[in-house]
Image 1: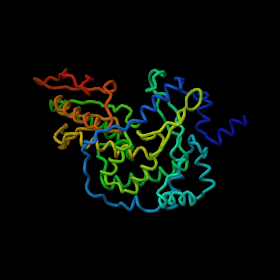
Image 2: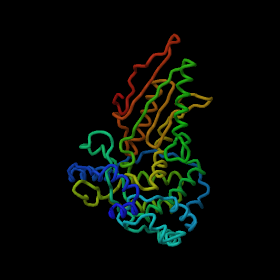
Image 3: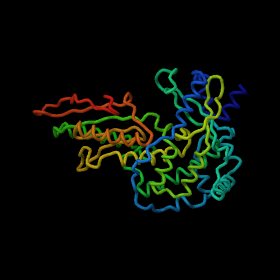
Image 4: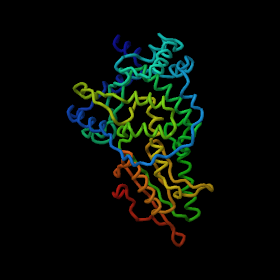
Length: 375
């Protein structure tokens, strides 16, 4: 009973899970296979230097990113964070709140990071737990890696992510059809638009073609050098790019397996699932692929406006008024993704096309291909 009380005080969520579901079950794949897999994934640095980045107009409100950290700003972010599994430091958010009310010490640390342009080495290392997805548990691709980072690093990342998100919104750096990791309920808006598009096509007897695309391990495999290039072309201030680069350069991950932990694995690719900064960094990176990969003359007209893509992070719905137009968009988008070091996974993609002849609706049998593979 005393052990349960101690566990509850330290981490209520984990204690509830242990009581209801039992102790956590770790990946039972042989450790050498797990380590070899992630060494391969994290070492991907190849992307095509001929990739034509989208150019944005000069940015405004750079002071949002360049200003020194303020205790009120840091405390407001810390106060809203709930306890989760800690990183190597073993510190909980509740400990920081109790020991540093007002976040004055944390603010001093964060400003020292700005002054010295140096990231503490402990912020670069993470314990990574594998969370099972659906499918065969003996397949390493059916496990999602979640990083357990030092709490001070996560607070720093949370504050920086909030700044970068505000800056991106003010400068229109993210397309309005990208709803992943945004403040409003974008999924409901996307569902409404899709429902309206299908309804309009039926009523007006218009052809409609759609494809649901999935990027293979997008979060875990995008090269760091491409990420930094995307941030630069988005107009992110140099000092902020340096902070992101410093967080990534020399970073390592130790993967939890059934028998313990793997050796630290260097990371040259991927954003950490579990880091608050990863969402906005990934969105800004993917934006380059979307802006350069979606043809300007493609799409389906609805409400006197044409749209060709509905995105929720890396889950994409491509829409066009013909199967030929849909295929053209997919080909161009796939080409840009490949140049960026990413690729779509045909097995996780799907399509639906229908057309009207003699006022009758027909399913279009024309095969839609992703990377030359029918979906």
